[in-house]
Image (cartoon, rainbow, N blue to C red; front, side, top):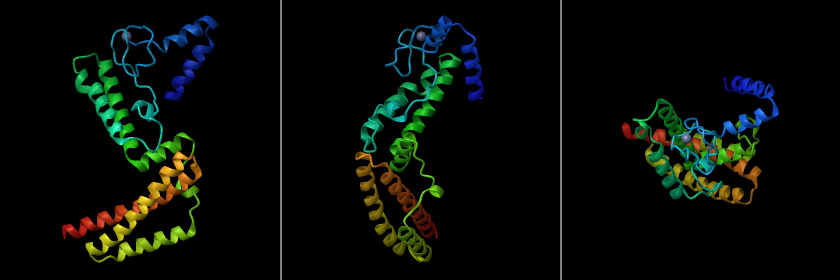
Length: 224
Ligand SMILES: [Zn+2]
């Protein structure tokens, strides 16, 4: 639908004269309510009439106003998120027009998604690589056979674990490996060694999968 919308607009732009095109382009940066030009430093509201603007596809780091880095300051991230959540929450727009109500719903949902992505280290790393055009699709990523064999051993140990004590012992060693991988990930992102960051991330995914199986099994034992 977006594609056809863009196509239609493109056709419309092509059919316009040069001067009108210029006007058209300016119009896309004007307030939907008062038609005055928007100030780019204000991501959400019109500086003239205060109307909440339409959602724009924004980079998550820019949206939450934190530096684009894996070693993000999580307390600043949370505080910025809470602040935006307060400003843009749909409850704040209950007395406003339908358009602003819709805009606030869309902004809130985008901000929640951005915060969820950036606050979980694994998701944050995937997002950074994705923005750089690097996919961590496991099927297309070669993994060291020795590592895969260790993963298989660990899976077997989890399967054979007969008590929560057994599981705790496996989890303890696993968590230490996970911590090491996170340390490497910080290092590789800060030195911009993205291939190494990618292979570390794939390993992390394998280990975190095992960790979630351990947690499920522990819960099952506790409920028995
Ligand atoms: Zn306005």
